[in-house]
Image 1 (cartoon, one colour):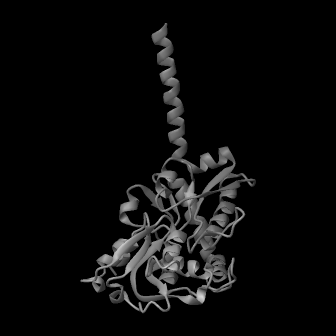
Image 2 (cartoon, one colour):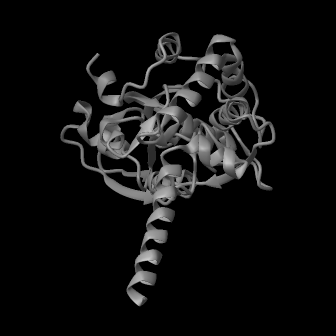
Image 3 (cartoon, one colour):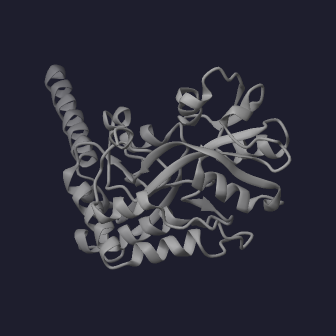
Length: 301
């Protein structure tokens, strides 16, 4: 009798686990069942940030909210709610894989290594990795980083990109890590770092939010070009189609371009400073032919 009970219990646990696994691989079913979209957002990125009071804003955050509006139609649930889950560069992939978040629209680069663990929607922002520094630092290019202290954010690849750049050959610099982008910028702001190497949009946003934006500049050569996209669970084709269709709709009807203008060309909170970053030719090309190509494909051009 005891063996029979144990067998039934094991079977029950197996069914529950199987059901949970099935839901993880059918995010739309999970969303429809719960009535909630667990959206991964950033609190100090150039594409998504907080202005306090539990309010998350930015180009990618607002774009994601429009994706959720389209998911309401796909799931047949007009009352879907959004649970904003703050993620970091370190935990974004694990939180997606274990079901804590349903999808993420932050500032994640689509690359071959990450494609082994997750999937990506079509590219919505093509990023340029640059250098931010204080105007009085004397730093104007990569060669000026020799002997300097360079900040970057834990879990990102910007400094590795810098070290691989041919212009950095023979240059020695000290690397310091911030736990998130705001912390990395604080290293620059406080003088503990001479430069902050990161995505251009992140640098511009942190400068715009700083106490004295006029004291900083984004300088030097473009170190790398990286396609940024919303991150999705792997092997969930229905969710990918739904998110891709929403993004393509936003591109086609011009609403994504208007959203870009709002967040990159107009004054933005909290300091009402414009980032003044016109839509690049790389971005225009990505929108003209929506695709989910990884960073390595861009490098081959």
